[in-house]
Length: 140
Image (cartoon, rainbow, N blue to C red; front, side, top):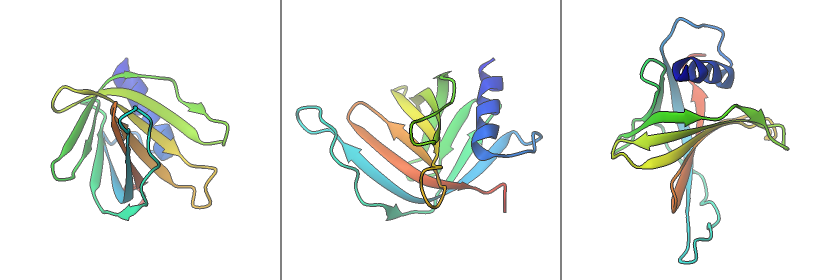
């Protein structure tokens, strides 16, 4: 059930029409970070920093992997139904476990409200979060 939901959401997110691939590849173009202060209040996002990393969405293993140093691995343990927010952006949220077994959130957003119609992946823990701008390598 989770694999089917993850595949459906992934296909919708990427706008792909091919259903034969089991691993989808993305490329990051930039990232930003933020953290909480001593009171637990989130700071503003940092400026975007250019970065080119491979990201894979592994449907068979229900896993998101970011090939950074060190490699980020997120196993999906729960998901929410996708929705369109007040800005017209499409959002998909997942609860994941990282490679150390720590729970985190992974959120995919298609930014329809931005001029460049970009896609983003957010990784969120209790005290730190980062976001990657991404594009699909399936279209190349």
